[in-house]
Length: 105
Image (cartoon, rainbow, N blue to C red; front, side):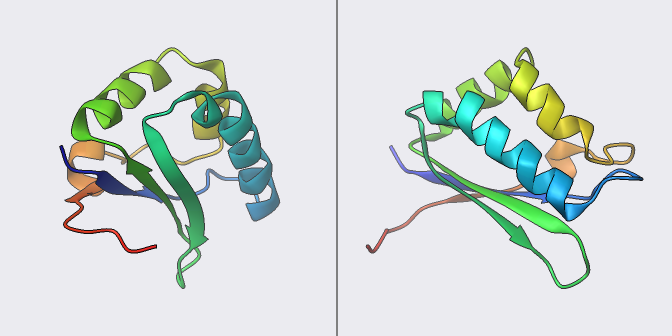
């Protein structure tokens, strides 16, 4: 069983700011992410072009799939996603997934 890291791109919807993103991300972390032991780490980063990435490390592919399924019916996740421009977003094409070979800490 190998850890999985995803790079999920984020583009803000019209009218939302980075402060809105940070607030929504903090609430999502507290109300959803913190309750799932399969999520080992999460980091929100700003790219140079004004876009963002949500980098999430899961314990396994099964944990990743379980969390993604549970996000679909989670109010905190819906609020987090509501500030994003998802009009052209196709997770199968845009969300990059990587299997860990080794982790150094």
